[in-house]
Image 1 (cartoon, one colour):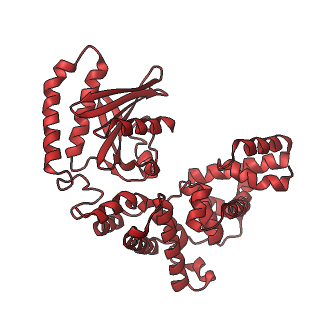
Image 2: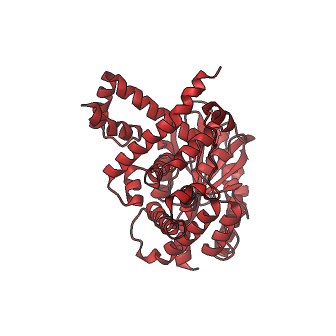
Image 3: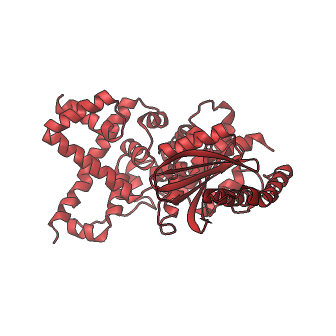
Length: 250
Length: 175
């Protein structure tokens, strides 16, 4: 491979656009050619500098309010997402019943296992957020807004992937306390269902997603890289498991 | 419940921030960027029925780009006038590189360097480095083949290395 042939491949490699064969091919050239290796290093550095500069512009909140008032449903804006007009009466009644059932059922469910108590707390939190006027502290569909919001508020950085293409729309995030521990709640929507993803630091080995059903809701719990994850929703278990795989995969 | 509004909210609204970012990088000031986004959203809302693809983001952004191009063509006739646009960060006139370094943060330098790029090179850099889009997605937004995306990115990055590389050398010389 000549350096002339290599040049465009340097960019494709930097951008993860190469298949395995081409990737191996350019890596071979880079190990032999100092000039191209230096150029690649310069490109990597440039990429890092641009990322560090954090140059994404965000619209002002006044503009966002104006635009949402114009294009989103009446009585709704990013801040009023969960107003009663959206959650219709039967759903809210069901949620209220579910809360009552939970309070009644917790003594039955609670065993010496700490995770059962946490499950109850998680569901409680999820149900309360469904009824809240402001279920998120940072309302945004943009991962570049939500993820950095947690900086300085939590001493860990929760994953906030963009799963729009896979059909999970990011709604925003909020701070929570679960079982006396600070947690990040990342909120997604799947069609008309809300998924709350609770993330907090934990210790121990990675564990696979474990399903629990409580009061008509599904909870999936897993640990990965010293973080504990709970995904809770009334969406069907197939979708919830898909969601979990997507989070685990990032 | 209005299904048209609901569908729009689920498919198009999530891309509002990206739409604004692209518009802002193309027209270089907040006020015009807001107008572009509003107009683009209106077009997208009306054309919703004709949208058949699964890539709502690239569709939305290509509308934004075309709206911005029309806007610049209509209201900012001469390419040279864009440099003195309100909202364009004024370039420091001092020829002394150390002076420039002291005046601006590295972040300002990087932003300015990208802003200095011709639209042809600025667009793929913004979409790749700031929006993190794939070559395929960039090709869809810009309506060019993937090979052209690659060659423009290559040119853009080399231009940036030259513009940003100079002051970096000066940085090394400072005590």
